[in-house]
Amino acid sequence: MNRFPILPWCHSITSLLLVASALVVGVPPPAAAQQAPAGQAVMAWHVTIAPSWFDPSTAPPQITPFGMLYVIHDALVRPYPGHRMGNSLAESWRESPDGRVYEFTLRRGLKFHNGDALTAEDVKFSFERYKGAGAKELQARVQQVEVVDPLTVRFHLKEPWPDFMTFYGTTATAAGIVVPKKYLTQVGDEGFRRHPIGAGPYKFVSQQPGIEPVRIPRFGQELLGLLRVVGRGLDLPREVHDAGHDHARGRAEA
Image (cartoon, rainbow, N blue to C red; front, side):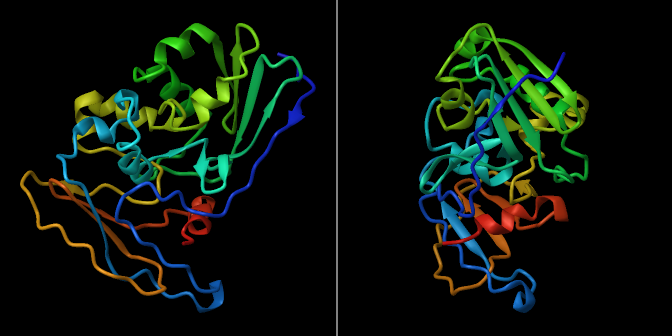
């Protein structure tokens, strides 16, 4: 396919979307003085954390599961404070003049929590696998998802659709959240929900059935080292996985 003239529509963001009811994050000190992550954060839900909350493909049409989805996973673009849509895994995105093609350029060096590279193939796979709220409308409107190269993906629409980015880039659906194609193909849907692998700021470690005490400690101005989700016992330690994903640090601002 020939390159088409495109209009830049790029957004940069630096703040963390606070989607959980009880998550407190500190402002990191300057890079030169920054120490190793330390401390603990506690998010608490008054309900059981359903397995569907770990898998964006089956996310229900509610805002609450995004508190978990955006902890483990990440999306090409997503809402941030003061931004309806901000770049996340995508370095930039553009819309064609006729409104029928949307092109996304991924950041270099992105990796999933298991070390696998995150590429445009994973973006296409995640979109086509999505079966949650809005899937029927997206499938009816999107003609093709084209992998141009490992860092570039294009969505071709059947006709101009001004609401495409609302469906793909906000919490209207979880279609824009990217999951690892290789890992998911190996373990299957059920295996993925038991042990999800994502590209978000926190890595899934384990889930233990049973009710834990709800604790919400206070924190000073420091980078947090552990996020403990209290609902039915889910622990996720903080990790910055590689230099290509260091943009997550910029989102850790109160």
